[in-house]
Length: 288
Image (cartoon, rainbow, N blue to C red; front, top):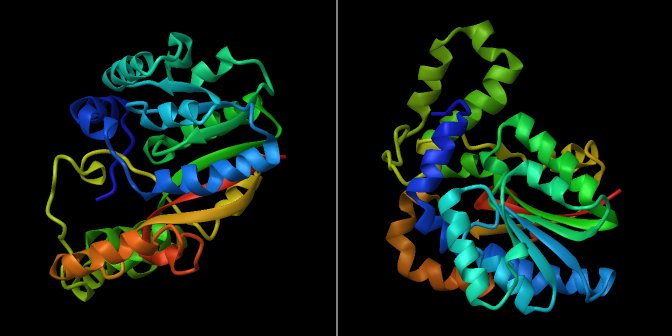
């Protein structure tokens, strides 16, 4: 089920699961710190000013500062902001480096004053209007040639799951945009459902964002064009959260798969099969 965007429901969801989001770690952190930060240093220099927009509990923000950058965090959620503020102060950094606010907070910075803006785990929760506004504001604060490093939910991964998300993909990406339902009637949805063995899996969970709030998925095949329209050039995509078999049968092979994925996930993050087998991707972009 695809939810309609509702800002209040989004706020409630993040407040309820603030502790979870404050402590989440995954391969994207390794991609950013081990692969992308060296590129930033090589091409932009060592004394960089950064913004971690939607910094959550502040873990990445602290890592960036520990590496010698001057990084600011911006967080809208009251509970996540408080967690990040406590952590950043405990780590010995300045209170000015953690800012309570949303998209409008970027106007606290001078135009073209920031070298790198990171937006990790944020874009998928924004309305189309917020998404466009955020990209415009990032372009405003970034220096010419500065980097945008951001993550997206991979829409094509839904084709690999063979479950309710696969049905949603066909409905939202193929059938409705092409007008197939108007041509063939609503019965096409039931016929499509009958092709999937587990059309109602996974079971509903109050902790899974897509079961409770609007979540935007992005096609990695069209993201380059999408970003170019906002005056960002895509340099590279890095896929993460790989699943070597669909999630419905993953548990059966879990003991063998987990160590295998951990061993080589970062190494294969730019390979073509990430377009289908990875749940998300990081985009490295430059302001043009």
